[in-house]
Length: 324
Image 1 (cartoon, rainbow, N blue to C red):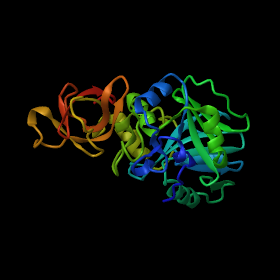
Image 2: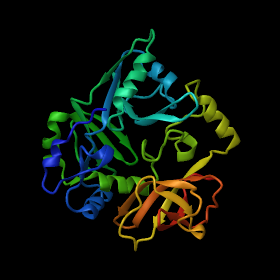
Image 3: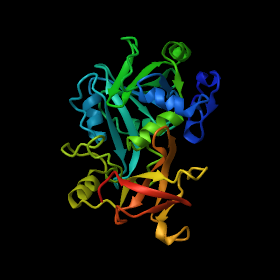
Image 4: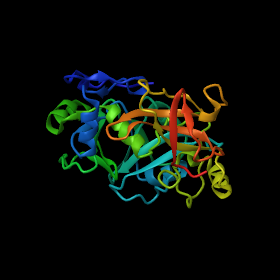
C-alpha cells in the first residue's frame, strides 16, 4: 500500500491525520473555522494522499463499462461520475471518482487502494485497446468546495460535482496551489461536511460484506439499466426484493460526551443499555460547526427508524438515510 506524505503538512498549524488520512493534515489549528470556510465556498482541501489512476486507449470507456457498476460507455467528456467495482457476490471492493477528458479517464480512489485496483484492471484487459497507469506519484488531488470562485488552469483535469470540484494537478505544484487558493482546510472539516451530506466512504462506511443498497449508492454509483458486470446478480436481486440486510443512518450524538465514538463502536438500543445486543456499528463520527457531534452508522434493516440508540456509550438519535 503506497501513500505519499503531503508537503502541505509543513504549513503553520498543520496536524497530521490518522489511519488512511495520516499523509495529509487533519486540521490547521481551527477545525470549525476551516469547516465554515468550506461551507461558504472558500479555501481548499488537500486530498493528495488519494490514489490517482489513468486509463487511456480508444476502447477505455466501452471496456470500463463492462467492469464498473456505472454506465460509462458514452460518458461525455468533462462529466463527473462515480462507480464501484464489486465482488462476484456483490460486495463493494473499490470506489472510483472519475471523469473523462476526451483522451483519458482519470479516477481518484481511497489512499493506498490504487495498486489492488490496477492489478484487477490489468487482469481484465484481454484484447481491449486500453492502458492502465498509476499516476499517484506525479499527480495530486485537491478539493475546491461548492460555491468556490477560485480559478484553475484550463490545462488541469477537473471533476465538478454538486459538492465541489476535485482538481488533478502536478504534485510538484501543491505548495504553489496552496499559496494561491488558501485558506487550507483539513480532512476533519471535509469529513464533517461529508457526514452532513450522508455520503459514504469506502473503508469507513463499508466492511467486507457491504453491498451498494445499504449505503444509498444505488443511483449515484450504480446504474440499474446497464449490462452485465461482476456482482450484478446481487444488485438486481436486492433491488427487486427491496431488502438489503443493513442500512446507513445519520446520527445526532449526545453533545455532553467529550470523546466521539470511534469507527466500529457498537450501535445498540438505548433501552437495552451498553450490554444489549449489537445491532450495527459507527462508521464515521465528527464534530460539525453547526450540528455538533454527528455520525454515520450501519444498522440492521429491521431496527425501528424511531428507535433511540447508543453509539458505544453515547446516546444517539437516528435519521433515516436508506429506507428500511
